Amino acid sequence: AIAIQNDHLPAIFNMSVALGDIGNFDEAFKMLQDVIDKDASILEAYDSMAFIYYKKGDLKSAKKLYEKILKLDEKNQKA
Image 1: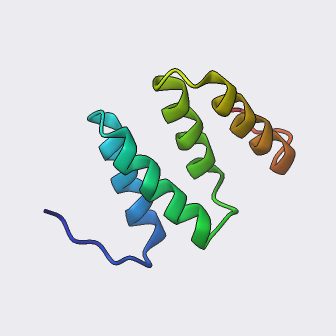
Image 2 (image 1 turned 180 degrees about the vertical axis):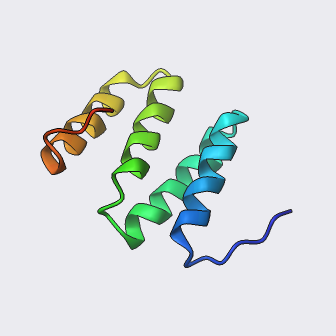
């Protein structure tokens, strides 16, 4: 297991992306929620959560998150 500081948000975000890449969406989602809880301005975390919703077939929740990203950053290219 890899240990990361629970307050080092870039490491937590990167670990969540790695977990999502191997299909461990539930754990990735939990880590992304932790990132957002600590710093709601990290839009990449919302984008990754929306992608997880999409991969799981929850298009309604994915759309809501992409809309939230656009409210926070109207020119966001990913949303």
